Structure formats: structure tokens, C-alpha cells
Length: 121
Image 1 (cartoon, helix red, strand yellow):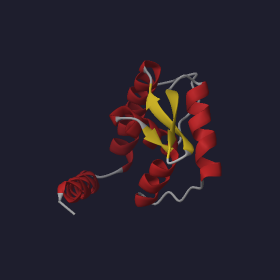
Image 2 (cartoon, helix red, strand yellow):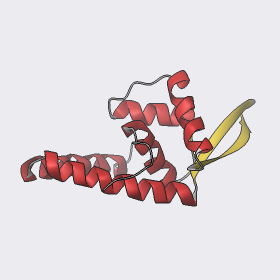
Image 3 (cartoon, helix red, strand yellow):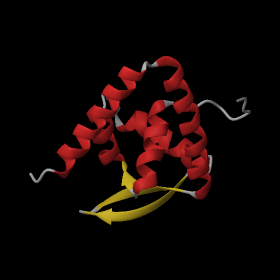
Image 4 (tube, rainbow, N blue to C red):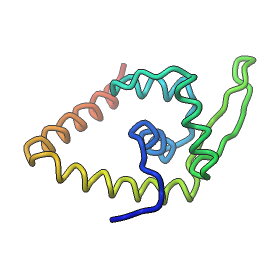
């Protein structure tokens, strides 16, 4: 599968995935990425938001929260299309590089994380 579009990075794919679930903002995304081992600062994250926005994959709304301007990002129609394309490439990469047992273990970990999120605090 050849494409003239630039390759994606995993952080941007992660951003688009969460933006497809609902609006998000920088600090939340930094914390979410940290849970997956991506330790980014705002100065590393916001250029990614801006690039995704410039490419038409994210739209931004601004809102005052606790006296501060907060930028919320949500996925666009073009962003959903881009995400689907990249997910296809990611699936192809996974099936070429991981064994069935490795994929099964990854799915078990995901299920445990989802169950933990549903647990009352």
C-alpha cells in the first residue's frame, strides 16, 4: 500500500484516537500519554496538535476554565479518514511483526485496563 501522505507517528495516532472519542485538551493528553510511557512536555505536544490542526485533522475550540484559556481539540471528518487509513497500516504492521500469542497478550492487557477504568474509585 503506497501513499503520498507522510508517515504518522504513534503520538499523533494516539491523539487522533482520543479526539475521535471526544474533545480533549493538552494537559489531559499529556497525562494520558504518560500512562502509556510517552513522557512529553507541552512544548513537545502542542506542535503536534498544531500540525494535526493545520492538516485539517483536528479542529480547535477555546474556552476560559478557572480564569485560563483552555484549547479543546476534536477530530474532523478528514481526521477520521486519516485515522482509519493509519489504523489499517498499524494493523498490517502488527500482524507482520507480532506472533498470535503476543497479540493475545496485548488484548488481555487492554481488557484489564478497560476493566480498571470501569472500577469505582
